Length: 81
Length: 149
Image 1 (tube, chains in turn red, green):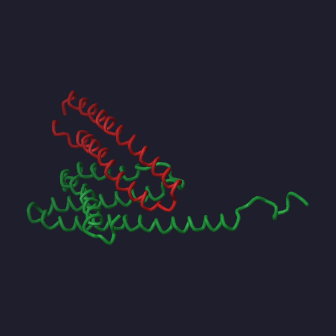
Image 2 (tube, rainbow over the protein chains, first blue to last red):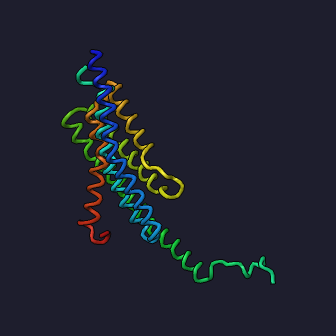
Image 3 (tube, chains in turn brown, cyan):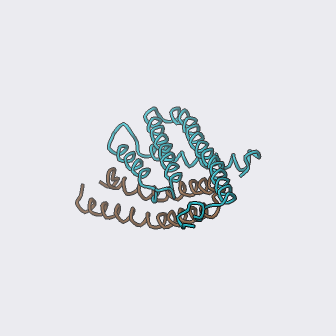
């Protein structure tokens, strides 16, 4: 692999995973914190709150996964190599 | 009269203890909803992966279909780990989202390094869990009035 392409790929992978993680990480922390607050206020609704949190986290984390896929493909199956 | 007399110590009255027991009981009942949702999501994701496996084999090849099935299996595993993390949230576990991402990273690294697997079917198979979630939520919210949430 051309050293320039290799260096650019590593840099792109690092930037890609770093930037794509910021938004979902903030959102997940916010959602989990609010859910725990809600459970503390209404313990009788714990199951529904946790269920909604599970659905929200599953969709939020897929945004991280998209960035992770791009980074891993650039590192291990680079199409420009 | 001594202050160490246990009868004089401030403690929960019978009404307060009954209220606390009722709240614990209600919490246990409401967690049944969560376990039902968790099992429903896992079952619907597995069924949809099984339903897609045949057409993928027929339209492409066994290699692509097996890659898809591996991705779908890891997607279901990911969902189980995520559900377990959410279940333990607030009861000692303060983090969500390390183990399940590790599983996904292992899957993609395996798919890129092993020539018998293809990356795109593995990734699309992994995303089958989202189809399962959408199907289950739509089914439980719209088509099934008995479990309307």
